[in-house]
Length: 431
Image (cartoon, rainbow, N blue to C red):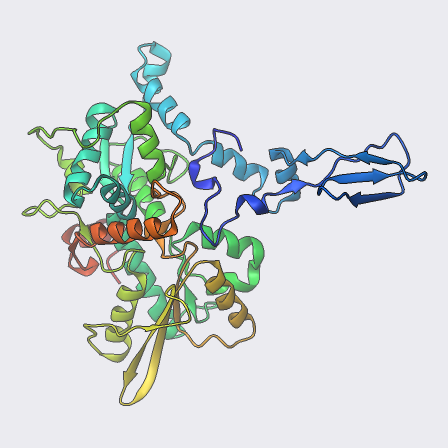
Protein backbone atom coordinates (compact mmCIF):
# COMPACT_ATOMS: atom_id res chain seq x y z
CA UNK A 1 0.00 0.00 0.00
CA UNK A 2 1.27 3.45 -0.85
CA UNK A 3 2.78 5.48 2.00
CA UNK A 4 0.54 8.34 0.91
CA UNK A 5 -2.51 6.55 2.22
CA UNK A 6 -3.82 7.30 5.69
CA UNK A 7 -2.81 4.81 8.37
CA UNK A 8 -6.48 4.31 9.12
CA UNK A 9 -6.56 2.11 6.00
CA UNK A 10 -3.61 -0.06 6.97
CA UNK A 11 -4.15 -3.65 8.10
CA UNK A 12 -4.79 -4.22 11.78
CA UNK A 13 -5.04 -7.27 13.99
CA UNK A 14 -8.63 -6.63 15.06
CA UNK A 15 -11.04 -9.51 14.45
CA UNK A 16 -13.31 -7.53 12.16
CA UNK A 17 -10.49 -6.40 9.87
CA UNK A 18 -8.47 -8.19 7.19
CA UNK A 19 -5.40 -10.00 8.52
CA UNK A 20 -2.22 -10.55 6.50
CA UNK A 21 -3.18 -14.21 5.92
CA UNK A 22 -6.28 -12.97 4.10
CA UNK A 23 -4.37 -10.47 1.97
CA UNK A 24 -5.84 -10.03 -1.49
CA UNK A 25 -3.48 -11.42 -4.16
CA UNK A 26 -3.74 -12.92 -7.63
CA UNK A 27 -2.61 -16.52 -7.08
CA UNK A 28 -0.62 -16.92 -10.28
CA UNK A 29 0.39 -15.23 -13.47
CA UNK A 30 -0.09 -17.61 -16.40
CA UNK A 31 1.93 -17.28 -19.58
CA UNK A 32 -0.14 -16.83 -22.71
CA UNK A 33 2.74 -17.83 -25.02
CA UNK A 34 2.20 -21.55 -24.79
CA UNK A 35 -0.76 -23.84 -24.43
CA UNK A 36 -1.39 -25.26 -20.97
CA UNK A 37 -3.77 -27.96 -19.90
CA UNK A 38 -3.81 -27.62 -16.13
CA UNK A 39 -2.79 -25.42 -13.19
CA UNK A 40 -2.13 -27.30 -9.95
CA UNK A 41 -0.65 -26.78 -6.48
CA UNK A 42 2.69 -28.48 -5.84
CA UNK A 43 3.75 -30.13 -2.57
CA UNK A 44 5.45 -26.96 -1.35
CA UNK A 45 2.29 -24.94 -1.87
CA UNK A 46 3.45 -23.21 -5.05
CA UNK A 47 1.34 -23.03 -8.20
CA UNK A 48 2.56 -25.00 -11.21
CA UNK A 49 1.51 -25.13 -14.83
CA UNK A 50 1.36 -28.66 -16.32
CA UNK A 51 1.53 -28.90 -20.08
CA UNK A 52 0.20 -31.64 -22.35
CA UNK A 53 3.42 -33.63 -21.85
CA UNK A 54 3.22 -33.58 -18.05
CA UNK A 55 6.06 -31.11 -17.60
CA UNK A 56 5.72 -28.70 -14.66
CA UNK A 57 6.58 -25.02 -14.69
CA UNK A 58 6.48 -23.02 -11.44
CA UNK A 59 4.32 -19.91 -11.71
CA UNK A 60 5.04 -16.58 -10.05
CA UNK A 61 2.60 -14.81 -7.79
CA UNK A 62 1.36 -11.44 -9.04
CA UNK A 63 0.40 -9.00 -6.30
CA UNK A 64 -2.69 -6.86 -6.63
CA UNK A 65 -1.97 -3.23 -7.53
CA UNK A 66 -4.11 -0.21 -6.68
CA UNK A 67 -5.36 -0.18 -10.27
CA UNK A 68 -6.44 -3.81 -9.94
CA UNK A 69 -8.36 -2.97 -6.77
CA UNK A 70 -10.06 0.01 -8.34
CA UNK A 71 -11.03 -2.00 -11.39
CA UNK A 72 -13.07 -4.45 -9.31
CA UNK A 73 -15.04 -1.71 -7.53
CA UNK A 74 -15.24 -3.92 -4.47
CA UNK A 75 -13.48 -1.68 -1.97
CA UNK A 76 -13.13 1.85 -3.29
CA UNK A 77 -13.90 3.70 -6.50
CA UNK A 78 -11.39 5.76 -8.46
CA UNK A 79 -13.09 8.93 -7.22
CA UNK A 80 -12.73 7.74 -3.63
CA UNK A 81 -9.04 7.00 -4.15
CA UNK A 82 -8.48 10.68 -4.87
CA UNK A 83 -10.14 11.57 -1.57
CA UNK A 84 -8.04 8.99 0.27
CA UNK A 85 -4.75 10.43 -0.97
CA UNK A 86 -5.88 13.84 0.30
CA UNK A 87 -6.25 12.47 3.83
CA UNK A 88 -2.61 12.19 4.91
CA UNK A 89 0.13 13.88 6.92
CA UNK A 90 1.86 14.79 3.65
CA UNK A 91 -1.12 16.69 2.28
CA UNK A 92 -1.71 18.38 5.64
CA UNK A 93 1.89 19.55 5.78
CA UNK A 94 1.74 20.72 2.16
CA UNK A 95 -1.00 23.17 3.15
CA UNK A 96 0.96 24.32 6.21
CA UNK A 97 4.09 24.84 4.09
CA UNK A 98 2.17 26.71 1.41
CA UNK A 99 0.77 29.08 4.04
CA UNK A 100 4.23 29.98 5.32
CA UNK A 101 5.70 30.51 1.84
CA UNK A 102 6.84 34.06 1.11
CA UNK A 103 6.05 34.04 -2.60
CA UNK A 104 3.40 36.50 -3.72
CA UNK A 105 1.38 33.92 -5.66
CA UNK A 106 1.07 31.59 -2.67
CA UNK A 107 0.53 34.41 -0.18
CA UNK A 108 -2.58 35.47 -2.09
CA UNK A 109 -3.96 31.92 -1.72
CA UNK A 110 -3.23 31.69 2.01
CA UNK A 111 -5.80 29.55 3.75
CA UNK A 112 -7.36 29.84 7.17
CA UNK A 113 -6.63 26.49 8.82
CA UNK A 114 -9.17 25.23 11.35
CA UNK A 115 -8.51 22.08 13.38
CA UNK A 116 -11.41 20.17 14.94
CA UNK A 117 -10.48 17.56 17.56
CA UNK A 118 -12.75 14.60 18.17
CA UNK A 119 -13.29 13.57 21.82
CA UNK A 120 -12.38 9.95 21.02
CA UNK A 121 -9.03 10.97 19.49
CA UNK A 122 -8.35 13.24 22.44
CA UNK A 123 -9.02 10.31 24.79
CA UNK A 124 -6.77 8.00 22.76
CA UNK A 125 -3.89 10.50 22.92
CA UNK A 126 -4.54 11.08 26.65
CA UNK A 127 -4.35 7.33 27.33
CA UNK A 128 -1.16 6.98 25.29
CA UNK A 129 0.64 9.76 27.16
CA UNK A 130 -1.09 9.04 30.50
CA UNK A 131 -2.28 12.62 30.84
CA UNK A 132 -5.59 14.11 32.03
CA UNK A 133 -8.02 14.96 29.24
CA UNK A 134 -8.02 18.72 29.91
CA UNK A 135 -4.21 18.84 29.77
CA UNK A 136 -4.21 16.98 26.45
CA UNK A 137 -6.78 19.39 25.01
CA UNK A 138 -4.58 22.36 25.89
CA UNK A 139 -1.41 20.71 24.57
CA UNK A 140 -3.16 19.92 21.29
CA UNK A 141 -4.11 23.58 21.00
CA UNK A 142 -0.48 24.57 21.61
CA UNK A 143 0.73 22.00 19.07
CA UNK A 144 -1.55 23.07 16.25
CA UNK A 145 -1.66 26.81 16.89
CA UNK A 146 1.74 27.80 18.25
CA UNK A 147 3.98 25.17 16.64
CA UNK A 148 2.20 24.31 13.38
CA UNK A 149 0.72 27.81 12.85
CA UNK A 150 -2.90 26.75 12.41
CA UNK A 151 -5.45 29.50 12.99
CA UNK A 152 -8.14 27.88 15.16
CA UNK A 153 -8.62 24.72 17.21
CA UNK A 154 -12.18 23.63 17.90
CA UNK A 155 -13.90 20.63 19.48
CA UNK A 156 -15.95 18.19 17.38
CA UNK A 157 -18.13 17.67 20.48
CA UNK A 158 -19.81 20.95 19.58
CA UNK A 159 -20.91 19.51 16.25
CA UNK A 160 -21.98 16.31 17.97
CA UNK A 161 -24.56 18.20 20.02
CA UNK A 162 -26.30 19.23 16.80
CA UNK A 163 -26.08 15.67 15.50
CA UNK A 164 -27.71 14.33 18.67
CA UNK A 165 -30.52 16.88 18.61
CA UNK A 166 -31.25 16.35 14.92
CA UNK A 167 -31.12 12.56 15.26
CA UNK A 168 -33.49 12.68 18.25
CA UNK A 169 -35.96 14.90 16.39
CA UNK A 170 -35.81 12.59 13.36
CA UNK A 171 -36.43 9.49 15.50
CA UNK A 172 -39.48 11.04 17.16
CA UNK A 173 -40.84 12.07 13.74
CA UNK A 174 -40.32 8.54 12.40
CA UNK A 175 -41.98 7.02 15.45
CA UNK A 176 -44.98 9.29 14.95
CA UNK A 177 -44.97 8.43 11.22
CA UNK A 178 -44.51 12.07 10.28
CA UNK A 179 -41.82 11.31 7.68
CA UNK A 180 -42.48 9.56 4.37
CA UNK A 181 -40.34 6.56 3.44
CA UNK A 182 -38.63 6.67 6.84
CA UNK A 183 -39.34 3.36 8.59
CA UNK A 184 -38.23 1.98 11.93
CA UNK A 185 -35.85 0.80 13.17
CA UNK A 186 -33.79 3.93 12.66
CA UNK A 187 -30.10 3.13 12.30
CA UNK A 188 -27.37 5.51 13.45
CA UNK A 189 -25.52 7.34 10.65
CA UNK A 190 -22.46 8.69 12.50
CA UNK A 191 -19.99 5.88 11.61
CA UNK A 192 -18.43 6.23 8.13
CA UNK A 193 -17.30 2.59 8.04
CA UNK A 194 -20.85 1.38 8.63
CA UNK A 195 -22.33 3.81 6.10
CA UNK A 196 -19.80 2.79 3.42
CA UNK A 197 -20.64 -0.87 4.03
CA UNK A 198 -24.39 -0.23 3.95
CA UNK A 199 -24.27 1.77 0.73
CA UNK A 200 -22.05 -0.66 -1.16
CA UNK A 201 -23.33 -3.98 0.16
CA UNK A 202 -27.05 -3.37 0.70
CA UNK A 203 -27.86 -0.21 -1.24
CA UNK A 204 -31.41 1.04 -1.50
CA UNK A 205 -32.82 -1.75 0.65
CA UNK A 206 -31.13 -0.63 3.87
CA UNK A 207 -30.70 3.10 3.22
CA UNK A 208 -34.28 4.12 4.21
CA UNK A 209 -33.58 2.85 7.74
CA UNK A 210 -30.45 4.96 8.16
CA UNK A 211 -30.76 8.37 9.83
CA UNK A 212 -30.44 11.31 7.45
CA UNK A 213 -28.44 13.32 10.01
CA UNK A 214 -24.81 14.14 9.24
CA UNK A 215 -22.00 12.86 11.45
CA UNK A 216 -20.55 15.21 14.12
CA UNK A 217 -17.41 15.64 12.02
CA UNK A 218 -19.36 16.74 8.97
CA UNK A 219 -21.65 19.00 10.99
CA UNK A 220 -18.59 20.62 12.55
CA UNK A 221 -17.22 21.21 9.07
CA UNK A 222 -20.52 22.78 8.03
CA UNK A 223 -20.53 25.08 11.07
CA UNK A 224 -16.96 26.18 10.39
CA UNK A 225 -17.34 26.66 6.65
CA UNK A 226 -20.78 28.24 6.52
CA UNK A 227 -21.71 29.62 9.94
CA UNK A 228 -18.30 31.00 10.88
CA UNK A 229 -17.40 31.31 7.20
CA UNK A 230 -20.00 34.03 6.81
CA UNK A 231 -18.23 35.90 9.58
CA UNK A 232 -14.50 35.55 9.00
CA UNK A 233 -13.42 32.42 7.09
CA UNK A 234 -12.81 31.54 3.48
CA UNK A 235 -15.17 28.82 2.25
CA UNK A 236 -14.42 25.67 0.32
CA UNK A 237 -16.43 23.02 -1.50
CA UNK A 238 -16.16 20.18 1.03
CA UNK A 239 -17.33 20.38 4.63
CA UNK A 240 -14.09 18.73 5.78
CA UNK A 241 -10.93 18.96 3.65
CA UNK A 242 -8.51 16.63 5.44
CA UNK A 243 -8.77 14.04 8.22
CA UNK A 244 -5.87 12.81 10.35
CA UNK A 245 -6.25 9.86 12.69
CA UNK A 246 -5.00 9.80 16.28
CA UNK A 247 -2.09 7.54 15.29
CA UNK A 248 -1.15 9.98 12.52
CA UNK A 249 -0.96 12.81 15.04
CA UNK A 250 1.48 10.60 16.94
CA UNK A 251 3.44 10.05 13.70
CA UNK A 252 3.49 13.81 13.15
CA UNK A 253 4.96 14.37 16.62
CA UNK A 254 7.69 11.79 15.97
CA UNK A 255 8.46 13.16 12.51
CA UNK A 256 8.97 16.67 13.89
CA UNK A 257 10.66 15.47 17.10
CA UNK A 258 8.09 17.26 19.26
CA UNK A 259 7.97 16.42 22.97
CA UNK A 260 4.20 16.47 23.45
CA UNK A 261 4.34 15.96 27.22
CA UNK A 262 6.86 18.78 27.54
CA UNK A 263 4.80 21.36 25.66
CA UNK A 264 4.48 24.32 28.05
CA UNK A 265 1.38 26.45 28.37
CA UNK A 266 1.61 30.22 28.28
CA UNK A 267 -0.82 32.84 29.38
CA UNK A 268 -2.18 34.31 26.19
CA UNK A 269 -5.28 36.14 25.09
CA UNK A 270 -7.82 33.90 23.38
CA UNK A 271 -9.62 35.19 20.30
CA UNK A 272 -13.39 35.49 20.99
CA UNK A 273 -14.07 33.50 17.81
CA UNK A 274 -11.67 30.81 19.04
CA UNK A 275 -13.55 30.62 22.34
CA UNK A 276 -16.84 30.01 20.54
CA UNK A 277 -16.21 26.38 19.57
CA UNK A 278 -13.46 25.65 22.10
CA UNK A 279 -16.11 24.01 24.26
CA UNK A 280 -14.44 23.95 27.70
CA UNK A 281 -15.95 24.37 31.14
CA UNK A 282 -14.95 27.86 32.30
CA UNK A 283 -14.31 26.78 35.90
CA UNK A 284 -12.56 23.40 35.56
CA UNK A 285 -11.05 23.76 32.07
CA UNK A 286 -12.36 20.28 31.20
CA UNK A 287 -13.96 19.63 27.81
CA UNK A 288 -17.71 19.19 27.66
CA UNK A 289 -19.10 15.83 26.60
CA UNK A 290 -22.00 13.42 26.76
CA UNK A 291 -22.50 9.95 28.18
CA UNK A 292 -21.28 7.21 25.85
CA UNK A 293 -17.83 7.04 24.23
CA UNK A 294 -19.25 6.43 20.75
CA UNK A 295 -21.08 9.73 20.77
CA UNK A 296 -23.98 9.05 23.11
CA UNK A 297 -26.62 8.35 20.45
CA UNK A 298 -28.16 5.41 22.28
CA UNK A 299 -28.29 7.19 25.62
CA UNK A 300 -29.42 10.61 24.41
CA UNK A 301 -32.08 9.38 21.95
CA UNK A 302 -33.40 6.87 24.48
CA UNK A 303 -33.98 9.50 27.16
CA UNK A 304 -35.22 12.12 24.66
CA UNK A 305 -37.74 9.73 23.07
CA UNK A 306 -38.92 8.41 26.44
CA UNK A 307 -39.74 11.97 27.54
CA UNK A 308 -41.10 13.23 24.22
CA UNK A 309 -43.17 10.19 23.23
CA UNK A 310 -44.22 8.69 26.58
CA UNK A 311 -43.66 11.43 29.18
CA UNK A 312 -41.15 9.30 31.09
CA UNK A 313 -37.98 10.73 32.69
CA UNK A 314 -35.22 8.12 32.44
CA UNK A 315 -32.28 8.48 34.81
CA UNK A 316 -30.49 5.12 34.77
CA UNK A 317 -30.61 2.92 31.67
CA UNK A 318 -30.67 -0.81 32.39
CA UNK A 319 -28.77 -2.67 29.68
CA UNK A 320 -29.06 -6.31 28.71
CA UNK A 321 -25.85 -7.68 27.17
CA UNK A 322 -26.20 -10.04 24.21
CA UNK A 323 -24.00 -12.97 23.24
CA UNK A 324 -21.01 -10.63 23.16
CA UNK A 325 -20.22 -7.35 24.93
CA UNK A 326 -20.49 -5.43 21.66
CA UNK A 327 -24.24 -5.96 21.56
CA UNK A 328 -26.49 -4.41 24.21
CA UNK A 329 -30.14 -3.48 24.39
CA UNK A 330 -32.56 -1.67 26.69
CA UNK A 331 -36.35 -1.48 26.75
CA UNK A 332 -38.74 1.14 28.08
CA UNK A 333 -41.71 -0.29 29.93
CA UNK A 334 -44.80 1.87 30.59
CA UNK A 335 -47.76 0.49 32.58
CA UNK A 336 -46.35 -3.02 32.29
CA UNK A 337 -46.06 -2.80 28.50
CA UNK A 338 -42.82 -2.66 26.50
CA UNK A 339 -43.19 0.46 24.35
CA UNK A 340 -39.69 1.03 22.98
CA UNK A 341 -36.47 -0.99 22.58
CA UNK A 342 -33.02 0.32 21.63
CA UNK A 343 -29.83 -1.58 20.83
CA UNK A 344 -26.09 -1.07 20.32
CA UNK A 345 -24.37 -3.13 17.62
CA UNK A 346 -20.59 -2.75 17.30
CA UNK A 347 -18.37 -4.67 14.87
CA UNK A 348 -19.33 -6.24 11.56
CA UNK A 349 -20.48 -9.55 12.98
CA UNK A 350 -23.20 -7.76 14.94
CA UNK A 351 -23.92 -5.40 12.03
CA UNK A 352 -24.48 -8.32 9.67
CA UNK A 353 -26.96 -9.84 12.11
CA UNK A 354 -28.84 -6.53 12.30
CA UNK A 355 -29.02 -6.20 8.51
CA UNK A 356 -30.10 -9.82 8.06
CA UNK A 357 -32.93 -9.47 10.59
CA UNK A 358 -34.12 -6.23 8.98
CA UNK A 359 -34.32 -8.00 5.63
CA UNK A 360 -36.49 -10.78 7.04
CA UNK A 361 -38.55 -8.35 9.13
CA UNK A 362 -37.53 -9.76 12.51
CA UNK A 363 -35.46 -7.01 14.12
CA UNK A 364 -37.30 -6.11 17.37
CA UNK A 365 -35.75 -2.66 17.89
CA UNK A 366 -36.83 0.92 17.32
CA UNK A 367 -33.30 2.34 17.13
CA UNK A 368 -29.85 0.79 16.73
CA UNK A 369 -26.58 2.61 17.41
CA UNK A 370 -24.37 1.03 14.75
CA UNK A 371 -20.58 1.30 14.83
CA UNK A 372 -18.17 -0.64 12.60
CA UNK A 373 -15.36 -1.03 15.14
CA UNK A 374 -15.48 -3.50 18.05
CA UNK A 375 -15.90 -1.49 21.29
CA UNK A 376 -17.02 1.49 19.20
CA UNK A 377 -15.19 4.71 18.29
CA UNK A 378 -12.85 4.56 21.28
CA UNK A 379 -11.28 1.55 19.50
CA UNK A 380 -11.48 3.02 16.00
CA UNK A 381 -9.11 1.90 13.25
CA UNK A 382 -7.16 5.15 13.48
CA UNK A 383 -6.75 5.18 17.25
CA UNK A 384 -3.34 4.68 18.87
CA UNK A 385 -2.61 1.01 19.44
CA UNK A 386 -0.76 -0.69 22.28
CA UNK A 387 3.00 -1.01 21.83
CA UNK A 388 2.84 -4.81 21.88
CA UNK A 389 0.71 -7.09 19.73
CA UNK A 390 -0.97 -8.49 22.84
CA UNK A 391 -4.77 -8.44 22.71
CA UNK A 392 -4.79 -8.03 26.48
CA UNK A 393 -2.60 -4.91 26.27
CA UNK A 394 -4.89 -3.46 23.62
CA UNK A 395 -7.94 -4.05 25.81
CA UNK A 396 -6.18 -2.33 28.72
CA UNK A 397 -5.40 0.67 26.51
CA UNK A 398 -9.02 0.84 25.31
CA UNK A 399 -10.22 0.91 28.91
CA UNK A 400 -7.72 3.64 29.74
CA UNK A 401 -8.99 5.69 26.79
CA UNK A 402 -12.55 5.09 27.98
CA UNK A 403 -11.61 6.35 31.45
CA UNK A 404 -10.00 9.47 29.97
CA UNK A 405 -13.05 10.08 27.83
CA UNK A 406 -15.26 9.97 30.92
CA UNK A 407 -13.27 12.83 32.49
CA UNK A 408 -15.33 15.21 30.35
CA UNK A 409 -17.91 17.48 31.96
CA UNK A 410 -21.38 16.16 31.09
CA UNK A 411 -23.59 18.67 29.31
CA UNK A 412 -26.96 18.05 27.69
CA UNK A 413 -27.27 19.67 24.23
CA UNK A 414 -30.57 21.37 25.09
CA UNK A 415 -28.85 23.15 27.99
CA UNK A 416 -26.09 24.68 25.89
CA UNK A 417 -26.56 28.39 25.30
CA UNK A 418 -24.31 28.47 22.21
CA UNK A 419 -26.23 25.62 20.58
CA UNK A 420 -29.57 27.32 21.17
CA UNK A 421 -28.23 30.64 19.88
CA UNK A 422 -27.02 29.10 16.61
CA UNK A 423 -30.34 27.31 16.15
CA UNK A 424 -32.12 30.61 16.67
CA UNK A 425 -29.91 32.69 14.37
CA UNK A 426 -29.06 30.20 11.65
CA UNK A 427 -31.34 27.16 11.72
CA UNK A 428 -34.79 28.67 12.29
CA UNK A 429 -35.03 27.59 15.91
CA UNK A 430 -34.70 24.35 17.86
CA UNK A 431 -37.49 21.87 17.18
